[in-house]
Amino acid sequence: MSEQNPYRDALSPDDDVEATRRRSDLPAEAPQSEVDEATTVRPTPPSEADEATTVRPTPPAEAPTDPYAAPAGGATAAPAPGQYDQQPYGQPEGGQPYGQPQGGQPYGQQPYGAQPGGYAAPPAGVSAFGPYTSWLNRVFASLIDGLVAAIPMLLLVIPGAIMLGIGSPDSEYNSTTGYSETVAGSGNTGMMAIGGILLGLGYLLAFGISIWNRFFRMGRTGYSIGKEKMGQRLLSESTGQPIGPLMAFVREIAHYLDGLAYIGYLWPLWDAKRQTFADKILSTVVVDQPAPPKVKK
Image (cartoon, rainbow, N blue to C red; front, side, top):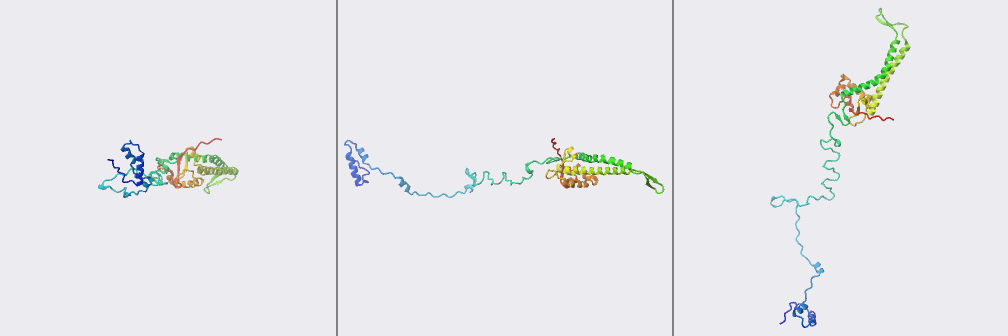
């Protein structure tokens, strides 16, 4: 009894004829199993086109997860790796907006307690331009400036005073009137005139030297002759630059306030910035700042 082929019922008439032809072509001694293998019709595997046109069921969409929602049970969930590490588009690293300096401090604004430019505050008795000059050194500088004007003046005034005294007419006491009277025909008018001229030139020379030294020289460079010799310099407290001839002249006038009972001249003895009244009015300071060496031509 022959074994029934399980795929025989699924064959069409054409397939049956083709199977009969194949059996006739087999050698007579072929085993029955080979015959069955040759006549077996295998199902055709699905093609890629069928795979592409196959409609698959869409899985249900998952609800969006709130990254800040607290988990069940009240426990705090740790953020997912990289959840807070990503920067928004266009945001620089570090979370700092563009144009904002590091540290969150706006541009142009100094942190509380910081000095402009990042420099530490100078110690007591020292300005940003040098140490404040002591009262005694300022006195020495003023004495030198006085001598600079007085010596040329004395060279003219002393001879002029002597000639004026010699050329003056003699006088005698009149007991009747009780006054001194000039002796007629005495004295030398020419010598008196020369003496008077020398006196005037001496005073004018002293005044001119003082104006040049105290106003123009010190106003433009910060150094009078006395201040230069003592290594001092007069500067504006706000700019650190010389104050100019005009302000030097105004400062000289303000020294009249210092002369009231000499309190203003003594004020640098206890003032933190060693300022006189004139310095405070004009906002000037005198600091130890030696003049640069002069280049010889």
